[in-house]
Image (cartoon, rainbow, N blue to C red; front, side):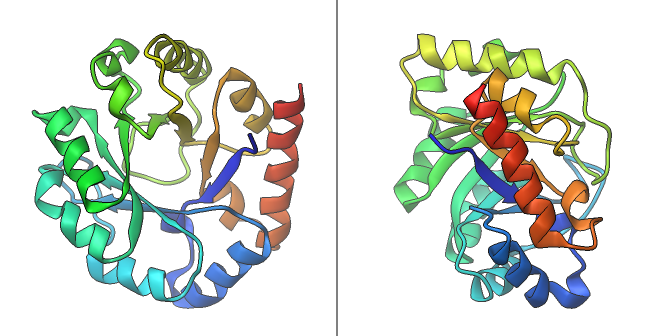
Length: 223
C-alpha cells in the first residue's frame, strides 16, 4: 500500500494560502492535514470551521482534520460540514470514546484517534477494532517546528502490533518532526501516512520538498 503524505497546513503562509494549496497538489500530496487547536487542550489557537471551509473550496484533496480540542463531540458536525473527510480526536480528551468514534462514522467521515507521546499504546486496546486510523504524536502537540521524539519509532511498532492483534486494518499516521531523514524509518516501523509541516513549508520549492519526502517514504516501504 502506498504511503500517504499529508502536508500540515498549519505551517503554511496563510497570506498566500491558495497558491500554497496549489503547490501541495503539484507536489503530489494525498491529503491536507488541518490542525485545529483551542488554547485549552493545547497551548495554541489555530482555525475553526470557517477557515476549514475556505481550505476546502481551494483544494480537491481530502481534508484530514486533527481536533486538538477539548469537548470535540460538540464540533464534529461543524468540521464535517466544513469539508473534513477524516476526523481524528485525542484519546486524552474524550470520556466516551466509542460513542465519539461512532458519531464520526455516522456523519460519513473516517474516524481516527490521536495519542500524545506520554499516552500508552495499550489505551487503544478496546477501541482498536472501530478505528479507521491512529495518529501517533511524535511531538507534544501545539506548536509547529518541534524536534521528533526518537521513542516514537518503537511506539509506532507497538501500535501496529496492537492493531494486528485486534484484526484491524487501520492506518497509522505520524505527526511531529517528520522529514525526509526519518520518513523511511517511520514507514518501516509501520506508518502508513506521514504528516509534515515545517520540513516542507520551510523549503523554497514546496512541490520538490513533497516529492523528496515521497521518495524517502517509498524507499522505506521497499526496504
